[in-house]
Amino acid sequence: MTSTPAIRADGLRKTYPARRGAPRLVALDGLTFSVEAGTIFALLGPNGAGKSTTVKILTTLSHADSGTAEVAGIDVRRHPERVRRAVGFVAQKPVTDPMDTGRENLVLAGRLQGMPGPAARERAAELLDRFSLAPAADRLVKTYSGGMARKLDVAIGLMHRPQVLFLDEPTTGLDPEARADMWAELESMARVEQMTVLLTTHYLDEADRLASRLAIVDYGRVVAEGTPDDLKNGLRGDAVVVELAPQLDAEGVSGAVRVVSALPGLTEVAAEGRVLRSRAESGAATLPRVLAALEDAGVAVSSATVARPSLDDVYLRHTGRSLATQTLEGARA
Amino acid sequence: MSALAPSALTASLGHTVLLTARQLRAFARVPAYLVMNLVQPMIWLLLFGQLFRSVVQIPGFGGGDDFLVFLTPGIVMMTAMFGSAWTGTTYIQDMDRGVMDRLLTSPARRGALIGATLLYQAILTVVQTLVVVGVAWLAGARFAGGLPGILVLVLAAVLLTVIFGALSDAVALLTRQQTALIGISQILSFPLMFLSSAIMDTRLAPEWVAGIARYNPFEWAVAAGRGALQRSPDWAAIWGHLGLLAALGIVMAALATSAFRVYRRSV
Image 1 (cartoon, helix red, strand yellow):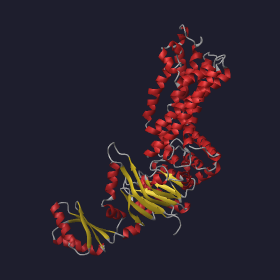
Image 2: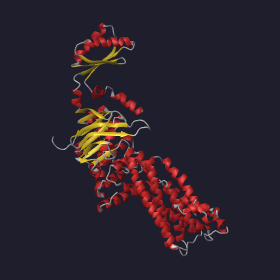
Image 3: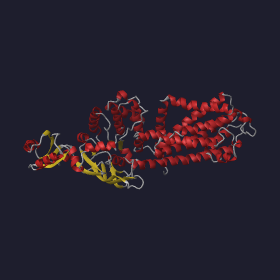
Image 4: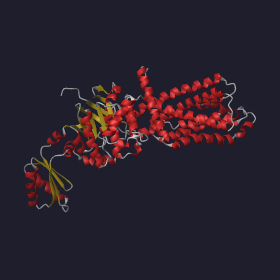
């Protein structure tokens, strides 16, 4: 593909004022990535990694301190008014007015984008149908469930058929059922609307399922980028995870690490509590040797698993931390 | 903002109307708002009208011999000022959700966002003004100025609404706190009301009160409205006050529009 990318961010840097006397907080630290037109791209990272800040800069809500960005081929700093016609923005918080009905919210959004009344009403009806919101179309949004309200948010972003749609954490806060429902909607939406979608998420499975490419963002920088498969294949090999018996003390654990490290064909051996992780070219062939060696050394084992690499492993490899713990900490902060 | 092309101006007006309609729909959906907005000025009018009825008998009172006639423009402006202190509430709600961010990333112009909150509040002011005048008329007050006088009263109330509504919008954008809006009505509006001739002829008050009142925009509105309801209005003074109100209104609206810049820096 030689066409202009739908999104191009180059060296974006953004700081926020901190408490008096403290140095400014760095939200983005030279963030660079680009998105091919017509694809779904995910920015994956924990809270505070800079995902939302990136989206705010690309949708003209906020300005970068330095660096440049283009959306649909338009410079966001020089021609914000043109960018605003080309993008749809679904913020992390609900973008609907709770005291309007679903239909009124959609029609208002379309008309603010310059659609004539009849066209806006027609498009609103089409989207209400597509997102299975037609039965609730004329109810006030404050009566909607979380899943319904979030689907309406996405529909609002789609009203004027934007070239690029930004979805900031579209499924955060939804229950598992509503999330699965939203994923199905987003997949079919991408097929029907033929546009570029940038979504941010801290759910690995969400990025894995929806995005054709993704970038892992950590401390305001892209630390890895590629298709989900590229990133997983980059790890080479399966995860071999052995949970040691609960009665084992710290000395026993480090003994077990020594035993397993000595085996040929195993790399990246490390212990987290009583969980022993390592990588092997073929996990299925290696696991029996691991268990035999541990048994010879007199170390009791509770369970053992072999897994194909996941995006979580990719995240762990590139940031040194597990995303699951990060997200919990972020939510508490 | 530089000069707008005609198409941009049309779009801004269109956006203002669309966003005003959104607020009117929300208002109409909570009947309690309507009752509160109409009942409160009536209570003020009738309560103050009874409570201070005998001030017309104080020697030196220059406001005529019917206190209700004197009081009506004061109550109209009180209603307008206290109501418009809450104009920024819409922004607080929109900022608590992602609505404000969505509007700011849409082609809707900042001027239209400010314009819509002011137009909505002005519509409420017009309705409330007519209710106050109607109730006063039913209670026996007769206004020598007739229809032209009432039109000027409405205009002065709308201009006062623009001033305080824009201030409320600006405070909402700068602080994002509903409590800051309570501050406007408690800390600013009450002193402005008492430092005016709204319920008492300032000629009967200490000289310093009359001195301050001359620079009080609330007093400009009361004086313009009350003057226009007289039998032979002093039109020069009335237009002078209306001009001052309009000029301050434009300044405040421009200030509120530029407050968006501060909000965007903080997101």
